[in-house]
Length: 239
Ligand SMILES: NC(=O)C1=CN([C@@H]2O[C@H](COP(=O)(O)OP(=O)(O)OC[C@H]3O[C@@H](n4cnc5c(N)ncnc54)[C@H](OP(=O)(O)O)[C@@H]3O)[C@@H](O)[C@H]2O)C=CC1
Ligand SMILES: Nc1nc2c(c(=O)[nH]1)N=C([C@H](O)[C@@H](O)CO)CN2
Image (cartoon, rainbow, N blue to C red; front, top):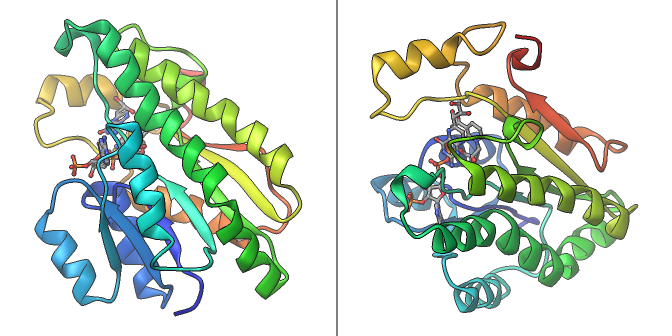
C-alpha cells in the first residue's frame, strides 16, 4: 500500500464522495465511519480500509488513533470531515451540546493531528514532498450563527487550529481549511428552507460535492499554500 489518505466521517455525503473520488484515482484510503451505511461495504469492496470510530468520547479518539497505527506507518494526508450540524433548538442541555460540538470539530482534529504527525512526516520523508492536513470548517466561521452557536464556535476553533498547525508543522506538512457554505442539502430540508438558503449566495445553486473534491485536489496538488482557508460559498459574503 502506498501512503494512504485518511478521511474521517466518510460513510455518507461529502466524505463518501471524497472517498469514492480518491479511490477512483488509484489513491489508497483509510476512512472512519460511525454508522455502518451500505456505502462502507462498497468502499471495502473497492479496496478502502474502513475503521469504526465514534469520536463522542475522548477515549474513543485515542482508541481510533491506536487502531489507525496498526493499519499504516505513513499518511499522505488527513481530511477532517466528520461533523455534526447540531443546534440549540434541538438540545435543551446546552453544556452537552457545546462539549459535543467542540469534541467533534476541534478536539478530534487537534488530537489526531498531534498524535499522527509521525505518519505524515514518514510520507514527507519517503517522498520528499509535503504531506497535508485539510480541515472542513464552514462559512459561519466568519459570521457566527444565531441558530448554531456552539457549532459555529467549534468550527471557528478548527479554523484557528488551521493556522496554529500550519506554523507548527511547516515545511514538512501543509495545513489548510475549506470553508463551505451550502454544498448539499439534507433529505429532510423542506422547500421553504431550500428556497431561502439558495437565495443566500450570489450563485443561488446547490453546487454538490464536486466543489469540495475540486478544492481538496487543489490543496493536495499545491506545494506552497498553507495556513489558509479556501472559501467555497457561491459569493455569499457579497449578498
Ligand atoms: N453539507 C453542506 O452543505 C456543508 C458541509 N460543511 C462541512 O463539510 C463536512 C461534510 O459535510 P456533510 O457531508 O454534510 O456531513 P454530514 O453531516 O453528512 O456528516 C459527515 C459524517 O460525520 C459523521 N459523524 C458525526 N458525528 C460523529 C462522531 N461523533 N463521531 C464520528 N463520526 C461522526 C457522521 O456519521 P454518521 O453517518 O454515523 O451520522 C457522518 O457520516 C462537514 O465537516 C460539514 O460541517 C460545511 C458547510 C456546508
Ligand atoms: N455536518 C454538517 N455540517 C453542515 C451541514 C450538514 O449537512 N452537515 N449543512 C450546512 C448547510 O448546508 C449550510 O451551509 C447552509 O444552510 C452547514 N454545515
